[in-house]
Image 1 (cartoon, rainbow, N blue to C red):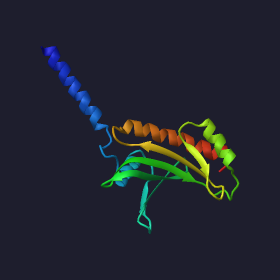
Image 2 (cartoon, one colour):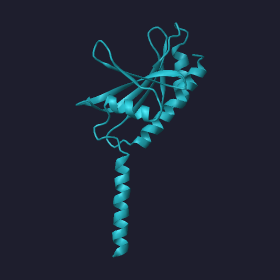
Image 3 (tube, rainbow, N blue to C red):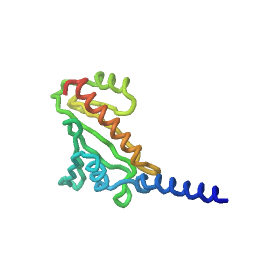
Image 4 (tube, one colour):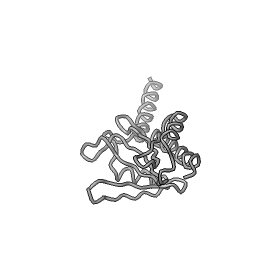
Length: 154
C-alpha cells in the first residue's frame, strides 16, 4: 500500500513538473516572447509600427532577425515565425535558394521580387508546446541563420 501511495505521489510530482514547462494553452503574447528571449540572454526589442502591427527584433551571433506571431486569439498566438531578410541588390537568385531548400529540412529560403534573400522558420506553440521544444527550435534557427549567411556571403 505504501509503495502505491509513494508511486502515485511521484507520478503527481512528475506531472506537475512537466506542466510547469508547458507553454500557456493558447500560446504566447509578444511580451511572452520578449521575456523568453531575454531569459536566454538575447536582446528583444518590440515596436508597434505606424500601421499597428508588432515588430519583434532580436539577433543571434551578430545577425539580426525578426519574430512574427500568427494564429492569434485574444492576444495569445499559437504559432510564430523567425525570419531574416538581406539586401543584396539582386545578387542572389531563386536557383540558389532552391539549392538551400533542397539540402535543408526546417529553415526555408526564397528571394523576393528584387532577388533579395529571405530565410523563414515556422514554429507551432500550441496546443501542447513546451519550453524545452521551443528552445530546441531556437537552436535550429541559431545554426541555420549563420550557416545561410556564410554560404551566401551575406
